[in-house]
Image 1 (cartoon, rainbow, N blue to C red):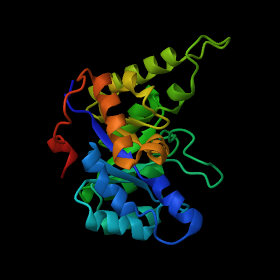
Image 2 (cartoon, rainbow, N blue to C red):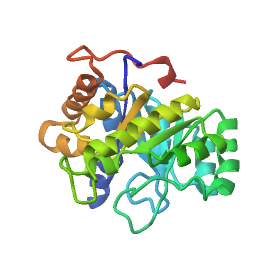
Image 3 (cartoon, helix red, strand yellow):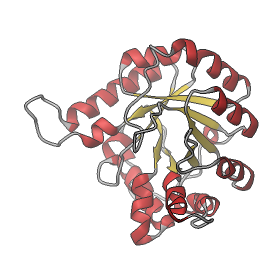
Length: 264
């Protein structure tokens, strides 16, 4: 098991607060500079087609002004591929996107989207940008991710986070969802894919996911920004970092330096 589990901090909702009133505050770049101080390893920002939070200017500034690796979440469109090729983030994570949704509601159907995904992934790979696909923990989707040429994937952890702790009549439990994540992570690693995870993770449920040995990166945003309202952004990141380290079995060990694979 890699000793250091990377934390990518999603700053979308820093931009959401800014856009609620207009202007420039709170500044996404200022938030990004605090990520490293709090124990984060990279910045995640979703440039949606409707620009509801992160904007093109945010992406350009984050890449130009912040030394941490930038992970740009995006839909699989020619427009977004063009932006990624121009900005050259460290990584992109291709996600499904619907205009009506409040947040990403599930994973990509890679099986059905093979023809659209393959050429776009090839362009991004050719530019030296790491590509991950955001998928549900389904072995069929994992196989398809490998087939379309993506070197990494990010498992959607929303079903695990939303599942009840107890047994329901349909048998849907958090333990069952965790088992799906464990099995899919093992399968992905055997195929040589780098395994990430995220969505809905909070301090009290992140530990079991952090314990999955094949997962090398978690991307977490809303929980950190929400907690930052009460304790501050850096402190909220430190709290999540500590919960991840406890889950990984590192106890209260000091934050380690980012692994070499986190920086290109």
